[in-house]
Image (cartoon, rainbow, N blue to C red; front, side):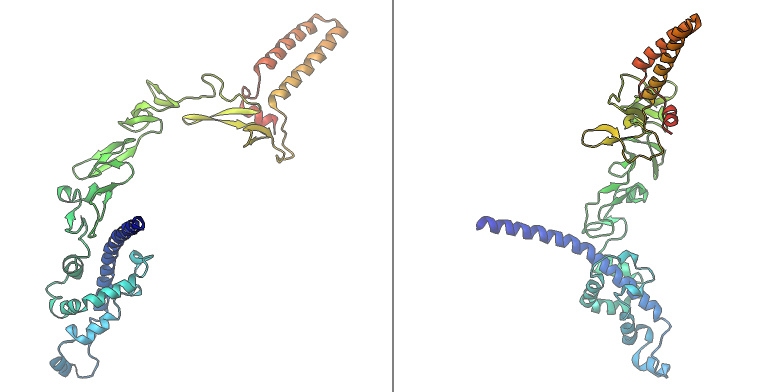
Length: 362
């Protein structure tokens, strides 16, 4: 029972922390919505009046319309409503944001009315006055945390994270202030290039990194194959060209040795594919006849086709030799037998060009 109580308490603590973090961010959004919609109402009512017919008497007795209770109530009609804004994309998908904004308005209505009546001409930046300073729900852009500390890079060059990342908690009363860099950028200020990127431009306030050539390993110093520090697997260093792709299908030992498959070179590697008319069986990993192949398309193996032609030609020539007893035909029969032996032992599906395969199977 005690163990359960401890676990339950721990869960409560974690949930409380999580809730605090969510509320810190939501509080800032609520404040922004409150201010933005209040300013919309302020703009919409700036040409209004008491509409009673005797403006001079009304202003002497009730005060000017500009700071009147009447105008304040008219403005409140716009407050915390997303449809008051021309563009409310910043608040889309935020659950109950209008309800939470109204709660904030209810909590600070006296302070907001005081600003409206007595402070708006002196403190005309409502966002700064309320959200940053009085309510302490947000930080100015480029600052983070409970004390609104400066994000990395803001003081040194005026740009948060060198313009190549975002500051954790930027504009909120939370966060670590750590720069979260874009792809290709690194360092505490995002002012360095990542491991597979190189500096194209760098000044005291700006950096631009470009991706290394795909054949590079351990980074690069410039673009293209010649800029590589070394080559990754599947590439080799050429003195003139830099890192060039190795054609594994031609170089080294034979790669694709199973029946009815051929080798196709790819950038940095190779693939073993089934020949035309065959399909890979995912269970056996063998190339089998594709029974769903197009009926007009042949599936006769090209190497078998060549061997059949050679053997048939040899039999025909041998028959003529026996029938005619010709020296010329005997020489042709010898040449044919040599070709047959070569085709039998050297020619297979992997040694026939792709163009020939396509022609023979068309």
